[in-house]
Image 1: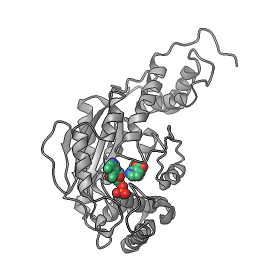
Image 2: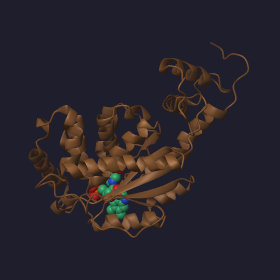
Image 3: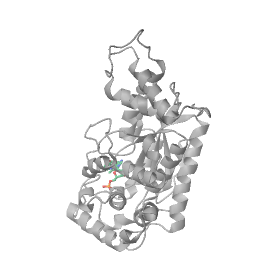
Length: 348
Ligand SMILES: Cc1cc2ncn([C@H]3O[C@H](COP(=O)(O)O)[C@@H](O)[C@H]3O)c2cc1C
Ligand SMILES: O=C(O)c1cccnc1
């Protein structure tokens, strides 16, 4: 693992050294394209010309949402638990895509309706048995929101023991595209209607019903009245969910430890937005794995000025996009560290 050298060169010097090192590799200048950009980012995050990022892991944060009572999703909350059990049985979507590259997957119970029995790959950080119905009241109390953020930080701290330097952030939570759309609206000012999409599938009452309910929740919460400094916390508290808040806390803590944060789809990107609002240094550590087919995702990536690595028309969540992007990050790390240099000079 990288220990950031106390005598490390200044950021500008480091950047110049990294650019020269990447340019000098045994390849035509620029010929590894975006892998070169990734290598530069990895060098800047880890503060070294020879990074050793350690292990990669995907964390899947799971929680339930009281707002599902309003018919905003096609599936019942019980599915959250079913998929969570599959993650532990290592046969959910994220497990099989991660297995293709030998990446470990860990489930974090952030607040599902019911607890799961203990398991090696389960981190138990339940805040409560699902959030409250945000149509009627805030999804969380202030204490619950603080607890979720803090549990994210504590979850990140556990990664250090395993020397994990690349972390993918996925989620499971029936109803969470609704919570994510609302939090994203509060943090970006993008029109709510543009952030509301079908999620796992259009609800039985249609997408217009989902939009109408989310407009009602938005109006109730009156987020515009909150100062920009407090807006991320208040949006997470008003709209949920525990998994989004916990992911945000974990991402901010990972940034403080200079880990590479692999952001997955729409919901994971909303957690990244919240983490960046709480701790702006997070942005520099984020690699955006893919552009989800959930329509609001592209708008969020554009807002962040982020260029995702992959475009595979996926819209599953769980960390599936992150699992697929991690080998590219590893490739960039190894290129920067181990690839030979061209003897002599490249032509100008
Ligand atoms: C079988 C199944 C597996 C999933 N894995 C992730 N999601 C994804 O879909 C859900 C969000 O969509 P919505 O807001 O429309 O409920 C979340 O659980 C998310 O992780 C799934 C959804 C389903 C149905
Ligand atoms: O992009 C995602 O993360 C996503 C999209 C739809 C449903 N669940 C997750």
